[in-house]
Image 1: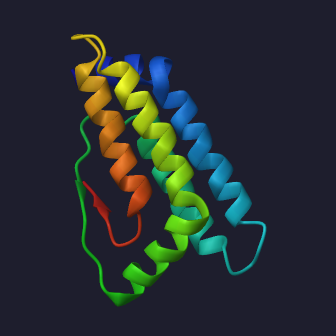
Image 2: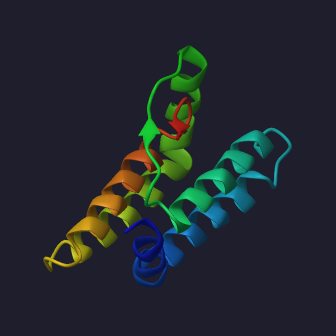
Length: 119
């Protein structure tokens, strides 16, 4: 299911979500201070393009918490809304439920990306 799921996902929602992560990464990289955040966005764009077969574990410390707060205000809410909307639309059909669940996984990642590990 992983390879086929990733191909179908890329066609029906992953492309748009991955591009939104790339756009956020480009906007963050416009400043020198935002380059580490932008590089993290590019890493999560790759995950957003092909999410099947990957698990996300959340953690982190005080630095991750503070960076997540700044991220949430500037970029996290719009990215989460894109993923949430995509997930709701995909869950309208029985066949789309696994893809909707992946979209909800990406919405949660959009809210708390720093301090998370992808395995």
